Image (tube, rainbow, N blue to C red; front, side, top):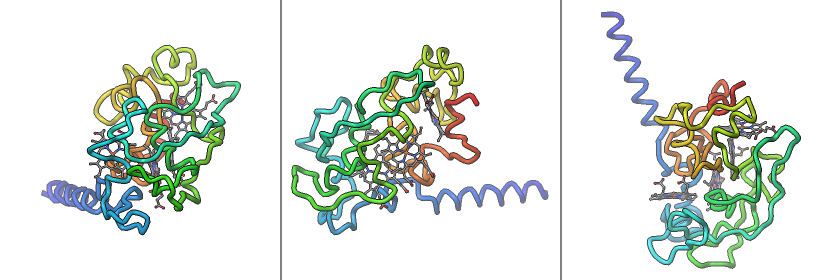
Length: 206
Ligand code: HEC
Ligand code: HEC
Ligand code: HEC
Ligand code: HEC
C-alpha cells in the first residue's frame, strides 16, 4: 500500500511539473505576442507566414523574418576534426535575430525596424567562442574523432537516434540542442535537460 501511495504521489508531482513547465512556445522566451515591436499580437508571425514566405534558405519553414547577410568568424581548434564552414540551413534562421545585425521587428517584409537583440542572447557575428554548428556529424566523424558516439546508431534519449532526432540532413545546427518552440519545456529552450551534462554526453563519449 505504501508503495502504491508513493507511486501515485510521484505521478501527481510529475503531472504538476508538466503543467507548470508549459511545454510550448506560449509564454516562452520566443513568445513575442505582447512586445510593443509586434503590434499584431500574434506569436508565429514574427518567424512564419502562411503566404509569401522567404524560401531562399533550404528547408526554411515558411520563413517570415528578414535574413542576415553577415559573414561569420567560425569556431576552429587544432583538435577539431569536423569541417566547419559558414552557418547554413536552419541556423541561418536563428542568426537572423541572434547575430544582432537584423532588427527583431524586421518581419513580414519590414526592413526599417529599430529593436535589436541584446545581452546574453546576442551571439554576434563572431561565432568562434560558440559550440561549432553547420557541419556534418556522421559515423565517419565519430570514428575519426574517437570521442563521439556514432549518431546513426546511438540513442538520443528523445525517442530515436541522434541522427534522426537532433541532426538536420546529417548536420549539427543550433536546433540540435535547442527547441525554438520550447517543446521540451526545459530552460534555455534546450531539447533535453543538461543536468549532469546529459545533453553534452548524448554525443560526446567523455
Ligand atoms: C522565434 C521564431 C519562431 C517562432 C515565434 C515560431 N517558430 Fe516555428 N520554427 C522556427 C524555426 C527556426 C524553425 C526551424 C527549426 C526547427 O524545425 O526546429 C521552425 C519550424 C517550424 C515548423 C516545421 C518544423 C516542425 O517543428 O514541425 C512548424 C510547423 C512551425 N515552426 C510552426 C510554428 C507555429 C505554429 C508557431 C506559432 C505558434 C511558430 N512555429 C512559432 C522559428 C519560430
Ligand atoms: C525573431 C527573432 C528570433 C529568432 C528567429 C530566434 N530567436 Fe531566440 N530569442 C530571440 C529573443 C529576442 C530572445 C530573448 C528573449 C528575452 O529577452 O527573453 C531569444 C532567446 C533565445 C534563447 C534563450 C531562452 C531563455 O529561456 O533564456 C535561446 C536558447 C534561443 N533564443 C535560441 C534560438 C534558436 C536556437 C533559434 C533558431 C532555431 C532562435 N533562437 C531563433 C529572438 C529570436
Ligand atoms: C551543442 C549544443 C548547442 C548548440 C549547437 C547551440 N547551443 Fe545555444 N546553448 C546551449 C546550452 C547548453 C545553453 C545553456 C547554457 C547555460 O545555461 O549556461 C545555451 C544557451 C543559449 C542561449 C542563451 C544565452 C545565455 O547565456 O543564457 C542562446 C541565446 C543560445 N544558446 C542560442 C544559440 C544559437 C543561436 C545557436 C546556433 C548559432 C546555438 N545556441 C547553438 C547549447 C547549444
Ligand atoms: C548533437 C551532438 C552534440 C551535442 C549535444 C554536443 N556536442 Fe559538442 N560537438 C559535437 C560534435 C560532432 C563536435 C565536433 C568534434 C570534432 O570534429 O572534433 C563537437 C565539438 C565540441 C567541442 C570542440 C572540440 C574541439 O576539438 O575543438 C567542444 C569543446 C564541445 N563540443 C563541447 C560540448 C559541450 C560542453 C556540450 C554540451 C553543452 C556539447 N558539446 C554538446 C557534438 C555535440
